[in-house]
Length: 211
Image (cartoon, rainbow, N blue to C red; front, top):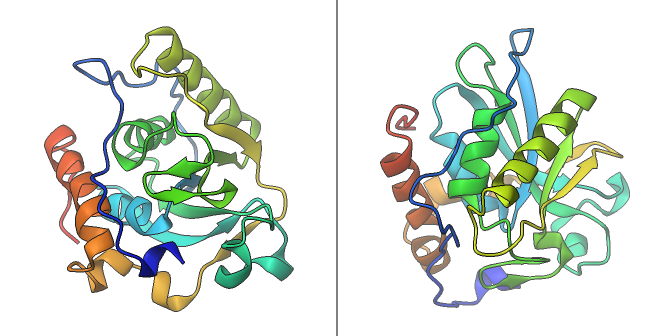
């Protein structure tokens, strides 16, 4: 399994522009709680990023895109269940918008130009995906991807899948939750995920919060 093998890889985002643009389409949301489900490779790092974003109430590692019956780590890691390692982000829309979460997702949390892989991890379970919960989320996500592609922010075309959440989100096993927090010296974390937190703190200082 990828997380028990040391592969020295420094995660980088293939961003060509000097600054990363916020989404032009980012309408305000109603209600006290918003939910975003995002997949960007190993969920350890993606979850850790959103754990440190102000306005995020909770980030949960899990599986999306497949059936409940096969939403288990050993099955998902075969790459044959349809799931992607994903993170459910529960947030306060009065403090942070869905569009701002996508900006962090694309610029800090992963490289959206890698197809069915992320860094050292390969397979459809590591694909880049946005699982939308309603038509408004779909509209914002698709518009932002068009905006980023048209402005040539990345050297390569974004391959992020924008899809409905067909069978729900299934939380991962307990040992996966807040893995970076509990295992900061793990070599995989050191080389692949701690750089993401440094980028978040550097690029979004106004949103950085200590856990």
